[in-house]
Image (tube, rainbow, N blue to C red; front, side):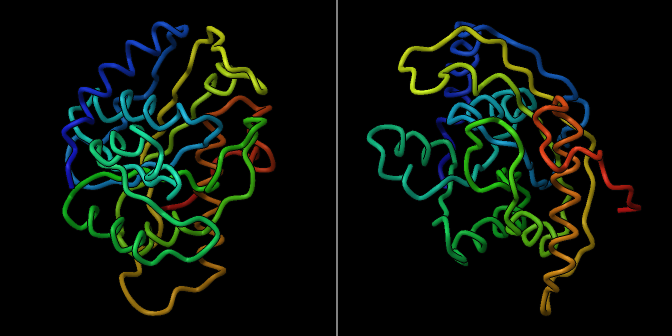
Amino acid sequence: MSTWFFHPGSILTNWLKWLLGGGKVHGLEHVPRSGPYLLVANHCSNLDPPFIGAAVGHSTGRAIHFMAKEEIRHWPLVGWLGRSAGVFFVRRGESDRAAQRQALMHLAEGRPIAIFPEGTRSRLCVLGEAKLGAALIATRAGVPLLPVGITGTGRIFPGRSRFPHRTAVTIRIGPVFQLPHQPDGRLDREGLQTGTERIMREIAALLPEEHRGRYGAGPIESGG
């Protein structure tokens, strides 16, 4: 899969971010410099993937393969640029085994991937209920998870505004953690739900309290 546009696109993204108000990135020391990992983050704007990709991937010299909704594949120019930056696509609202296999393939070959566990944008930028997909992939692959919290992107195009508002964007990166590894066999739904809860609480801990939704109790303590 081609990623030729990932780093040039990140340079353009950093310029755009500065133009729109700049911001800060905290926790780059937590990002693995080698080997696969699964980045998990909250999602409230279409600007989240390029901003996170530039902050986490470009800053550490590694392209990150983002999982994005299938509809983006067909957007003029954006779809082509996304594919050229290593994006792979998932059909929302159904179990897309092809997307799961592609995610596992990237991880097996040592590449980092990124998933938004909620599966869609939160218009109010408050964490909503997450899907089980991120926990499933992490459990099957046995790779570290890297939690990221992003704030500010939802205020750049507030409501139905077509014109951007200058807003500082903050990206916080937490320490990696892992879920129990189960490479084969039937996965227990209760275990996936527990893993998903852990993922969302790790993300919530990186967000302002008003953005955490029901996951605001903080990270779940675990030996993993």
